[in-house]
Length: 183
Length: 414
Image (tube, rainbow over all chains, first blue to last red; front, top):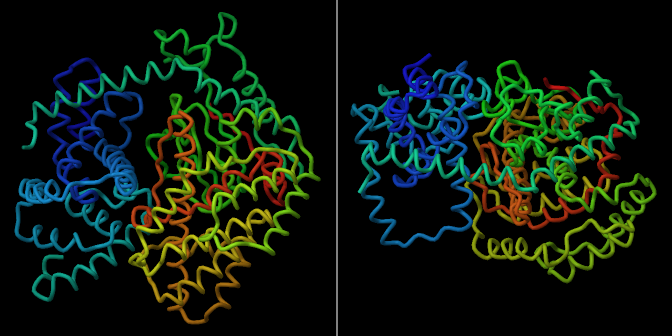
């Protein structure tokens, strides 16, 4: 069981303060992950809050037999997809507001990308197809196993393999010869 | 300015409290009870009539017992079977189905137990989560998708294109009490309906040019042919037609795979036509895939999705078609991708329509649709989906379940 799951167990046992530990364990990673999909920091943060809210609203859903991280990222992905569908159909954003947000959207990556290597790869990832980008993110940025990434993305192991294969190939093209050592 | 950690934590707790309160209010409404009871009735009707061409498998007696218990109010003599039943919701006790059902019209690849299943729904033992009252696996084969009702909400976990019509049938069966009341098995009506559909093909109109009047006309003709009126009215259809027209005007350039909105719409229309006329999945797949392949190769598109080839290969007819279509492996790969991309588009469009239909009637509905291309093709919102949803009746659902090789199975999940 990971630390977050331990904290969540204590929260369910009545230690309300333990939820802050759960938040510390996963919140930033969730924001970063969701940001990959929605490309808006505030929305990503909002959806990450919604994701953690699930743990409180539906305390019996998580069974402690799988990784809490995997469980949360699966929920986060659902929420991001739902958001994208609704946004595509209904949302109108003022240009000025969108510009302002873009400038601040760098924050989560600043928080989480500790090395130049990851930053270069991360920038290139934004140009990958959605599924490839998410697979790379989960494996290389969240350090999930292939199996856990497959659960989050509702795919099988072979599909994750394929996505990563194509993603790496594309990233090599995007990053260029000098960047190949990063992959 | 971004929120601090403390602010975020406060927000999490505040939202949780609001949602818990909202769930309590919702659970006390009659809507969910009506939906669940209707489902129980449908399931009872299906089982009560037997499923010709198929068989009822494990375990018949207990399955019927389960259905019986569903419709029985909880009382001192009939206590809830789950230990964690919320004691502070006395109203809910009466309304709640306290057992999990798993009704499957599937050839063999049952959703539950799949290691890829959504952790929100299934336990590690492969049975539906305790909070999922009912799961209808409405797929007819392949990997199957499912509909489940969880805490008064209808959820979908649609993973197949081909099963969405069944899925729609199931939802309509649940939410449309009129459909339940009018249920009767009259094969001749189905046949007449089919004839009507076929005759309509002769004067099929360009879907782009079809207006509300034409749609209303079609609805009336079909209603007259079937002597049933289970179709949506033009008024009900209007919002979706407007959406489609809007999208048509707003999105004309191809998607990144070279798929145009018209491609998706045209294919979708044909898929539905074939589906409704033939009731045969294999035919649909053949037509579906042949059309996809032809259109897609013309467009010279290529996507990066995968995972479809194994499913395709399971259908020998389709596989033959696939091989005959083009001998080179490169083309086969393009074909695979095309199937995958279109499948996603169709799947998504149908599900979105269904979701809106439910939401418009005040039935809370959320989706766990996970198709890879869904977000990319989200604006492919074929209006023809209305007909997909509107046509199936329980008679047709029954007809579908009579397909050779199909086994209707009712599982008692716990």
